[in-house]
Image (cartoon, rainbow, N blue to C red; front, side, top):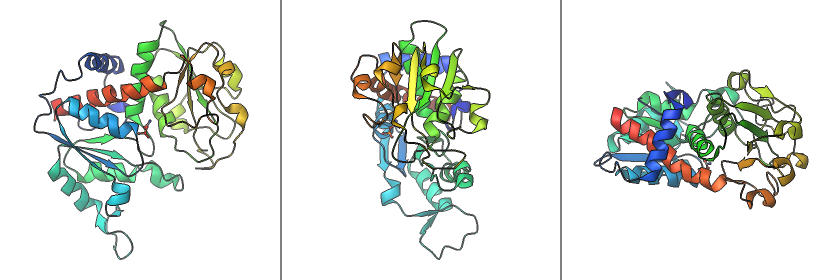
Length: 312
Ligand code: CP
């Protein structure tokens, strides 16, 4: 594995989950592996969990860590070949990626979708700019289209909390006042497509995700019906994909409640808006796995970094 960019870079999800769970029992077991190696975390967008868990994972492996809030503190980057840079952008990705490659052994990038230009978002301009011009492995810490570290942590959490072999898992849209990207939902769907489970997506009409992601996955527009007899309900808002980046619906009836959750476990990637996306009674109950999902971000990142250190 040269890079970790999407779920497609996982050769065996069950093996990676098992390895992450083993790392969780002894996080410092491989602390010699990263000795003398440096990871650089570049954030073009805000973060709490991704920043701290990836840093923690790297430290567990004995790596040095450099973190830069590139969006606020870096030079504005130009990504187009042949651009005449006489406007606001001060540095080209060609130089920036090569310079970063001199200082570290792995670079991890967070660069969200703009939600204004579907074509540019799907081209993953920032992530692909680094892949093209950096000479070191690149890790996706949430790009326009995917959040594969989150999905790997979610797979670990599902495995830890499942009580039977054939699960019913639901991905439910929920309301949110702001337009949010599709990345978490996309990667969760791709991860669930690798599982032997009954998997249902529920959302209001107009919130269909890319058919290239959902493929044949069942979509049920009646949320209550979708949630019946679920073992796990993963809740996430996303903006419209067809009417790109628009908030079409703020219907409060789509908020996750204890009644709709029934006996299922509740999952969300965080951050979450209480009593908008999900009511307090769910988040404050023993059925909520959100803190454990966040904890598992460390071991998801650690298994990824371990494999990159071993193979590069
Ligand atoms: N779930 C997640 O990626 O959290 P942050 O945005 O805080 O990193």
